[in-house]
Image (tube, rainbow, N blue to C red; front, side, top):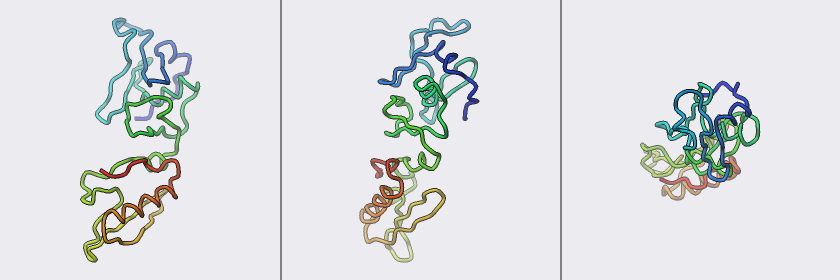
Length: 173
């Protein structure tokens, strides 16, 4: 759920304090009856692992609020968690990016992947392992390999070349 970006830095700063070193948001004021929460960590993590925080009657994702409170502006596009921990909102762990760049840094493979490596699957007709990658809507086939490890190595090289700094640091399960 993308927030409506009508909240200003001044409004957010009346309710929240953001520590860029720890990534923790602390309540400093609450309108209404929940004054017992002042001084405590703000928000809660949702099922997807993102911290969501109520501010001025609306819900915002913490990593987007970090940009507002730290830089005084909303992020343009997506915000990427470099270490894949969606509740780690330390300033050093988040960066502004395009949606395609954010998808490039997804991390490990899908649960249904039997090779153990993202972008590597068994090509049943040949019995060899197929490496592939898709970047910005363009599909790249990286040949067939004898082992999933060889296919993964080819995929990893392609990630570094095509995704640059947004290539996942680790890519195996």
